[in-house]
Length: 377
Image 1 (cartoon, one colour):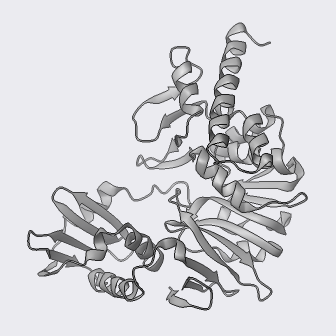
Image 2 (image 1 turned 180 degrees about the vertical axis):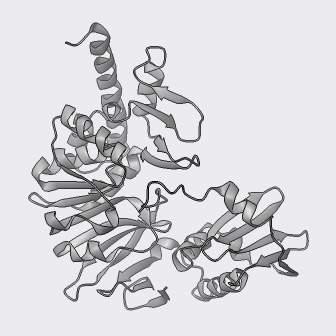
Image 3 (image 1 turned 30 degrees about the vertical axis):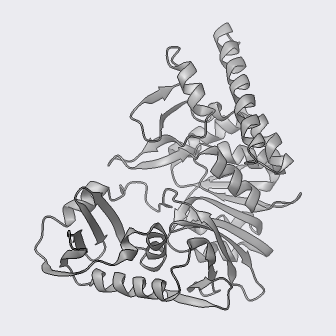
């Protein structure tokens, strides 16, 4: 039986949700009436009972009466809500900022009867939005974290939805439920898993964060998928082993201070200060982690798999003090990417697109699929 406190909470949440979604609709962030209805109907707070607002250290718990109003205010704001972290403190699940969720759902371009696979159930909130728009029978979702699945399924049921939710490695998709007209990944990948291509229906599409870009890839008759990067994005990476914590920024930096390296002074490429170049590097050198220390400005690049790293500290004369270590010459590789990008006229990330062949090979193109920028390893 609901208590008066429960009724008050739901009444307040409904008011805040209505006001928040109305503001997003007025701003043009949710243009499709189907998604407007879904966001109005699905209560986000039911899926994020306990969370940390991104960029803060404050833990909110809706069950606590002294935190309830602040927690609900955070739920119905355009904030990413962190809901889980690994043993190393790296976030592993969140409820993404609502405007980005709305953009992705809009670009998914669904039609009645479409079957959708969601990679990364997470809290279940995005799953519920899909269910509201398409019907439960059309939605399949997968997540590798058993505890997330165990929380999402009852939260979905409480919201009135019962899609197929699978616990497993999202890289393999859900072949027993294929084919899918749309695949939407709420996590990031370095390269698109081949299994996703194989599980698409004819003319199907994948919406996925590759590196630092959000790509919409459409299946072609030859088994390849291709499409443009429609915006920047940086989701939590798709994980294959929940027991292995992600490499932290602290660990990345420590790798470059505990060993000896080759030192020299050279020119500092202007590209290092350009956000667009950072996006390109993430596509071309996907296993290289890039950390920038602001004061004094030092660029740190680490490839954890090989133990290779380079530190590039800027000097007053616009030069770089380079300290490099490991079997890969990351500095030389970075300079090659900078030369390629600058030679193309320093294009913005949204001018690029991606083609993934049936054999899994990736090609980065500029402006149109037949304009090769580079092959991706």
